[in-house]
Image 1 (cartoon, rainbow, N blue to C red):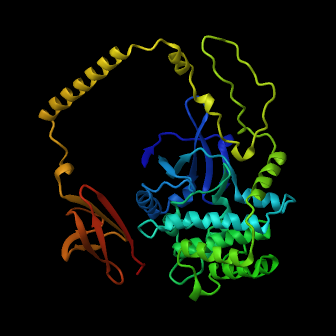
Image 2 (cartoon, rainbow, N blue to C red; image 1 turned 180 degrees about the vertical axis):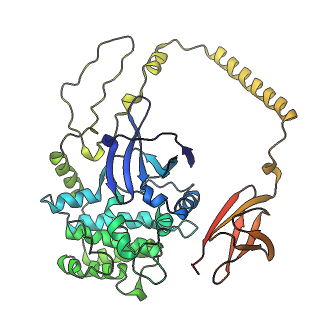
Image 3 (spheres, one colour; image 1 turned 180 degrees about the horizontal axis):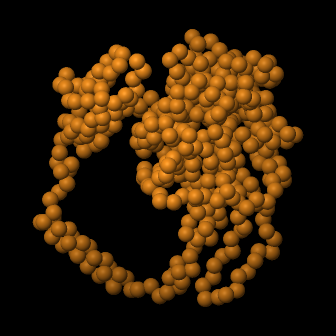
Length: 451
């Protein structure tokens, strides 16, 4: 995971592909103006909360090794300085269509989403979340909604999977989370908690929107779904699954997505329902006919031929698939220099092997010489790590393994292994254990209630 700071980052409005309560989705272009990646430019109102960025960095650190094709993997973090610093999460260029757009078209007279297609999307979503929930660290998405589900290359892809803990730091009410961010959480004493069972509830709420064939309204959030549940027509086992997943009975909620997926499989078998992902292709075909040309449409690329100035055009231009409207023909990434190099005469195998051997010998000799004068980094042989402790409010007394260490904010060098940390702030002391590995840096942020 890379973190970059930009001196200037002012995207053009034409590069905005989608906008919701979390921020703008933008195309990032290379030096030649071609779309290269996509990013989520998070609203400054969210990142201005002090604990937001800290929680986001912690979650990205935990997800650094997580790479699943069902998720739009975050590749980079861009931080733009300014009066209100903005943060962007960069991922690979995928294109595709958001489920929220499909629901909006269905409501305005487009092809309705069948029960089989809706259950297919729900099952794919739960299976993807089950893989996330199997990771260590009690990981959860926290912000599942039609706005964060993308259909690309015939697959269901989940976006914005790292924002849950950061959004939790906003401390909104359940109604405000839904109205402003389209993040559904059950009302609970002491504030909303974005855990694995909430992921299941958010997935079920997304399924309710597909069964209803329209986006849900501001008043139709978790706990206020009576009318919309009465309006949908689904088999009874699927309805029973929905009622359990939506926390209608707090004593029987699904703990994680794996449990919910297995229960959904049993309900599908009981009803004999046939999952029809082909209906999603019909939605795709209809969106192709309804789409109007946009500045984001990329013309088909033409092959580059070396040593010729003649460019041949195809006889008939293939129709542009708007589900992949942001994809780029890979041929446009072949620079002329690369094509020219391919036509040069290749050097003999003997000379190539000689140069390769000489380069290896020179590299080894240089490394040996440098090692005589530059000592190895301390962390290679150290048995310690770094523990960073922050709190709100600051100035909280800290004890590690029973020994006083000072007050927050505090940076300590500790032995690798498990340590017990005790913070004496307002209210009850906070005691937790943290594992620090050799040469690693572990940060913890603790929020204390107001006096």
